[in-house]
Amino acid sequence: MTKRALSSAIIVAVLFAAYKCGVRGLVFLIIVIGTMTQVEFYALLKKMGQRPLVATGEICGIFLMLATYFSAHGTGNARFNSILAPQLATHLTLAIATVASVVLLSRSLERVKKCMISTAIGVLYVPFMCCFPIAFLAKDVTDARRMAMIFYAAAAAKACDIGAMFAGKYFGKRKLAPDFSPNKTIEGVIGGILCANVVGHIAFVYPAHQLYWMKNTLLAMCYSTLLAVMALAGDLTESAIKRLADEKDSGKILPGIGGIFDLTDSLLFAIPIHLMALTLAPHGFFLCQ
Image (tube, rainbow, N blue to C red; front, side, top):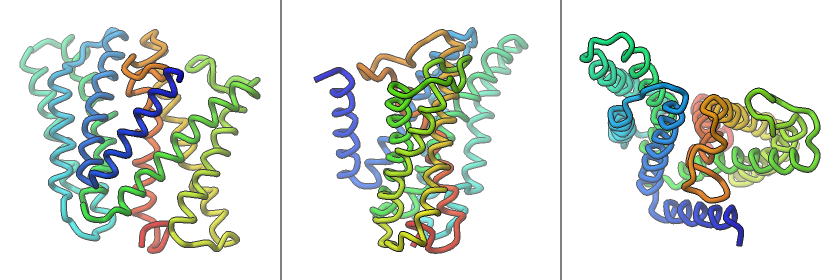
């Protein structure tokens, strides 16, 4: 068994365990993964010459995710407010204010430039994006469909990653963004979008018991393509960060894959967009019922 296969088996086992534990188990997993991703993000920033306050940023990130969960817990069927609730803005403001207070106490302009901005970006890039699925799940911890919605979006995003990797390896000729990610190709992007569409049709049409293919196929295709584009945007953003830090992987915790950030890069963009679209869409859209 290769290192990548072993890491993949571990990931699947962890996801299965979180699913069996219910919504609270999945929320706990999101918080743990978000925290680990933030650590790796700060490590890359340090290699770029920045000086983020790792402990402060991590504490603020954990506070932000926990506060989002408890404030959104049991809010019922309110649609839009569960994703971009006023409480979330308040929690984020408090987190950033904490970072600013710690840095400004040093009374050093150079410290403000190198510490405050990079620390705040770390809070915005990872924990804040994790708050979207946390708030969505916290609305009703007894509703298993909410977990399914998260897993469906994650499956489509990772299918895009896998499809892009294989299509790029066997058919890739034209570079997509050589300055950021030399290995990514236009052919890989097309393969990734096609794979996301296959998974998207299985995930968004069949579970909703809406088997009217002539009616839903175009909608599922557009939606899956949107998730694929956002997943690719997240992947390219992480590739650019690693390029600036002169690193191939964000870490070594997952043999054959890299770090946690290498695993979550596409999810940080795709899942929030998925949940905002799902919440704002008309009643009956996919799994909103």
